[in-house]
Image (cartoon, rainbow, N blue to C red):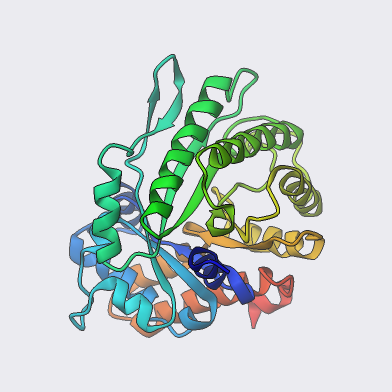
Length: 336
């Protein structure tokens, strides 16, 4: 077992998942403003530290994805944030892309940037304690999109990123997100997601990336949020497993789903069913942002000094997601 493979497995084994706390300052500002909290550097770290030091972190969260600002901040006890995360038995990671920009040649689509100077930034993040990284490619579905240009360009960027990350002895999370925005059918989502993932792995192999040291972070197969033809959670689970079975090479140790705008409950229920139908060798876990944090954020906003109350809300959500990652969740447990 390679060192990268053992890091990847440690992040997603035994029902553990990933807390995506890598919101940019602009995104975090929107989240805080939505609950009427000022978005200061102090408030951003205060909320995140509240989650990182909660009781269930040790049992449920194998990895935490940080943002550039956060990995350079110190906790209230004076420790580096990555050290705080490491002390509770989790692993610190870092988002390294610089965002999705307009794609030249197809201006309605996006290309993710951030390759310039990445090798140097990775060395810095490694010194700051990061052991894995994340890069997100984003694709929208219409009758014309995602175009071949978008699929190929983003796959190439994801592969170049992953090769540089492994060169620096870190595990790359590869996140090709096919958005749920739109009125497309679940079958459209299945076909487009399959094309996107297959092209990503074609490029990863071409760039000599060790697939046993990669975590895939895909979307689930869902109808567009404006579609009149929504499917059941069971159909979502079956289509998602089928898509990944047909698109992902066997060497990949783990798949950590993004929540992609699903509610906390929906993201948990779908993950649970995916694991019930999972007849592959892949670990299927979670890498959730809002679907882990939203209820905790609302509680925290009522009284930022109520650390224990906020942690209790977060612990419950983390516990539910970890049960779902083992196919052991049920609706009744939500009220316990």
